[in-house]
Amino acid sequence: MPRKRIALVGGGQIGGILALLLTQKELGDLLIIDTPEQAERMQGKALDIMGYRPNGGHDVELRGSGDFADLEGADVVVITAGMARRPGMSREDLLDVNLAIVRHVGEQVRRHAPDAFCIVTTNPLDAIVYAFHQASGLPHHRVVGMAGALDSARFRTYLAMETGYSVEDVACLVMGGHGPTMIPLIRTATIGGVPITDLLSPERIEAVAERTRNAGTEIVSLLGNGSAFVSSAAAIAEMVEAHVRDKRRVIASAAYCQGEYGVDGYFMGVPCVIGAAGVEQVIEFPLTPDEQQLFDNSFGAVQASVRKVRENP
Image (cartoon, rainbow, N blue to C red; front, side, top):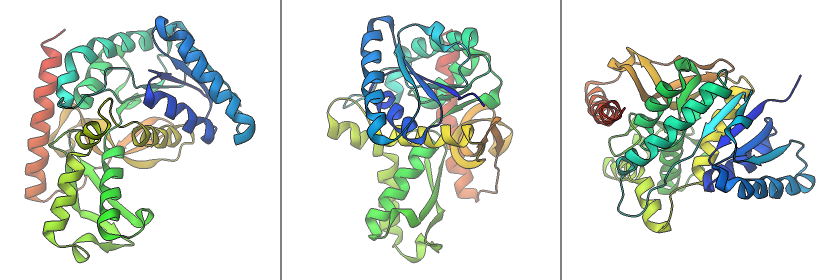
């Protein structure tokens, strides 16, 4: 069976780390693509990781490019291209500049890789994945946004830090938009099967939830230049692996909803099944009235962001 062809559009910090992680997982041959001006830099990144393979024991091919024609026949396309946040910026501040970039990428995917499964990571995520879907013309089950996988990982991280227990034993779910209205669902959080409400006070739990909502901003502020990249790349790699290996993983993602949770025609952070066919199912379960209100508020923020996309054709 021929190897999968995985294209990473955007060779910045996330793209570089992601290329390394996917090499380690041996999910397929990799293309790192950026603008023509960055072609040699992408070739250098690919060659650097190629030189790692003998010591790492990984046998995949990598190459760098500045030509979108090289997307031809890609099985998976990951879009990380776009401007990253700087201190004092919100994700929404990136919309105008990143909208044009992602629309262009979508048109190139439509032309060269119309059968690919596409994962969008560019911010503001919920609006940008909507714009990419429109520009690419791909079926909605083959377009998804990476958000909840990262947000849930952060929630797990902070719960582990707060309790002192292993992060491996923490399970939880974050839903909603990828921004300050995201919803860390406290009743889903357990450590070793024990509800977090039996381990931490309501005040400490809320502090962890609030830190989760503001995690991206905290990291941007501390870095001073750029935004989170290692944790983002790890979340993307998890999604790519679920698709390539047909694992049918349940991963919180910005998936296209058709009535689930009261959302129709938008991409929203929900638990979904990712397998060989792409997004194979949105999992809907009953929310409490308070949770549904939070979700509706988050959806309102996503609608406002998407409205700006529609007003900027």
